[in-house]
Each structure stands twice: as structure tokens, then as C-alpha cells.
Amino acid sequence: MNCKTIQPLLSEYIDNVLSARDTWEVDKHLSECNPCAGALNELRRTVGLLAEAPRFEVSVNFMEKLQSRIAVIEPQPPRMAWFSGLREMFRPRVLPAWGAAVGACGLAVFFLASRPIVEIDRTPSPHGPSIAQTARNQSVALAASNPLGDPAAAALVASNTSNTLNIQDGGEPATTTQ
Amino acid sequence: MIAVSNADTTLIKRCQANDAAAFNEIVSRYKNKVFNFVSRMVGPGSDAEDLTQETFVRAYLNIKSFQSRASLNTWLYRIATNICIDHTRKNRKMNALTSSLLREDDEDEADVEREIPDERFNPERMLLNVELGARLNQALRALPGKLRTVVLLHDIEGLPYEEIAQIADCPLGTVKSRLFNARAALREKLQPYMEGSAIL
Image 1: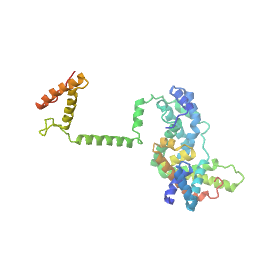
Image 2: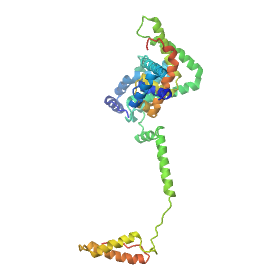
Image 3: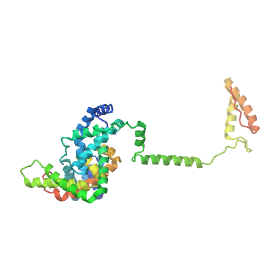
Image 4: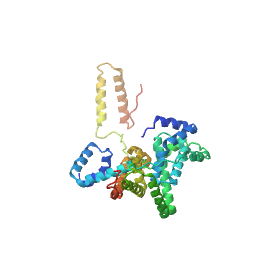
């Protein structure tokens, strides 16, 4: 680190809030750089001067004056909690976060709206059965052998027979309800 | 978020239940802290006391909607900061040059009376400190409001960075950079007066 990068850190260095690494870097630099060490001393003196500045105290009749001011004030109804919450949500400090959230939502809507709609062609392929259909046929063939005598396998074979007929007719596969 | 102390929470609840004694207790507890801050923000004098009173009047009017999101300390400093900024704006608009010159004269006189150090038997050092105190006030007043707020809250009132961020309503990094800039500006202005000072 050089003088230009060290000097902005001196304020935090005085307050002991720098990370261990930055503190080490500043220590290292200060041991080698007299101008920065001098700047640190002056900054410490300034902070010391502020800390030791005499404190002001209110006059002796401060409380009486305040009480007489308050005595003529009609108590106002408390602000509604939702109103305070709303104000808190739209504080200047929170506005960038709101902006980012609205922007992200806008982008999401834009991408979703501009995405091409893929229509599934359910007409039977002239090049033979699809991969899904082949897999289903294999499952049905296995179920048809029904080595365990399972009634569900028999139902699958039956439903496949009716589906095959429907698909060959150009319609949607029928749903079988037990 | 800065936690609210139990004693403050109890006082706030009592105030919200229209207990006037609880509000007086809050004023007694915070009046000098707020007054010291306001005095440094706008310069010592009757304006500072009026603005401190205004801070507590505003607190009194709004205490029922206080929701303990921040500490009472933070809340009062925030009210005081806003009042001081409004006051400075109004003054600047009304009579920038005349009012500032008058206030600086008053301030210097007030400082001569107030800022007497313990070392009474060394007139030379005493003079140096008095002059330094006056220069410090001038240097503080010359800072932009945002920088002045941060340096006063941290270096004079001793508040942590996080609490200052809540009062000034800005990110922590902004507090750090404002503090650095304020200290650097003060250092530059006070440098000629610091050498040989007894305070330092």
C-alpha cells in the first residue's frame, strides 16, 4: 500500500475498527513513512481536541421553560402504526433496494413474456414411436408377463391397449380411473 | 439495530401511557447531551437552547408513535439533527452574512468564558487553549452539515458508527468516509494552532 491508499484508512485506524490485515498494512507503512506517521499524529491530536472539548449545559430554568411550552400543547393522536411502517419502508436509505427489486421483477416479466411458446405436437410421428412411447411399450410388455400376478400390472396392460387405440385415432391418451 | 435499554423502554411505555413524570425523567436524562450536540451544530447561545427545547417538544408530540426500532438516544439525536439542519437552512436564507458574523462574535465571547482549562497559573497556555477552543468551534461551524453531524456524534458524543448511520440515515461506509473527511478538514484548519498547545 502507498500513502494515497493508507491516508484514508488513518481515521478508522485511530478508532481501531480496521480489519487485522488493514491494521497490519497501516502499521507496516507507518514504520517506513514519516509523512504518514506525521499525518496520523495530527489526526490523533484533532480527535483528542474534540474529545476534550468542554461540554455545554442547559440553563437552570430549562425544565420550567420546557414544561410551560408543553403545557399549552394539545396532545396529538398517535400516528397509525401502518403509516409509520409505510414511511419506514420508503426511507431514502431503503429506496435503492426497492429500485433493485422492481427492476428485477421487471426483467423477470420481460423474459417470461418474450419467451417463445412451444406447442407440443401430439400427432403420431410418421417415423415410428417416440422414445417415451417405446419406453412405455417396454414397461407394458414387462407388466404383461406379470411374473408376480399383480392386478395393477394387468390394469396397466389394459389401459395401454385403450391408449394405443386412441393415439392411433389421433386423440389424447385416455385417463384410466380405477 | 441499536438495542433500547430496559430503563428507556420502561420510560417510553410510561410516557405512552400519558405519565408526565416519565417524560420529565427522559428530559433530565438527555437534555445536556442534546444541548451539547445542538450547541456545536448551530453555535452556543439562546438559539441552541431554543432548538433543544424544540427537540423535546417534538419528542413529546411523537412519543406515542415511537416503536423502539432505534434507541431513545438515537431517536432524540435524529430529531435534533433535523431541527439543526432546518435552522441552518432558514438562517442561511434569511441573512447569511450578518447573522453568521454576529454569531461568531457571540461564540468567541462565550468560549472565552467557558473554556478555561485547569492550569490556571499558566496564562500563556491558558490563552493558547482558549484560542484553540475558539478555533475548534469556528472549524466545526465551517464544515458542511453532514460532515459536522458525523464528527460531533462520534468524536464529541462518543456514539458508535452503527448508531450514527441510523441517525444520519446513511450506510455505514458513508459514515466512515464522512468522518475521515471531517477529521481531515479539521486537522488542516487547526494545524497552525495545535503546536505547543497544552491540551494536546
